[in-house]
Length: 91
Image (cartoon, rainbow, N blue to C red):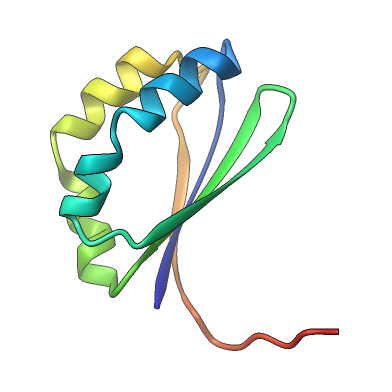
């Protein structure tokens, strides 16, 4: 499993959430299997799971993503990283 981690600040969380929700079909079309959203005020971190790195990279390169960023009200450029799953342990 590969996880795309995206962190950004937004002007208005509710606006961002609506735009993010409207982009679900595009994420799925690129192979995304789930996402998790973490929030501290208007600082948002999204973890989106993909089957592999290539799928996450294609999603990031999709021109439709630029439109979403423009409509979602980002304060600055999102910071992204693509990470490969290594291990988990429950306590």
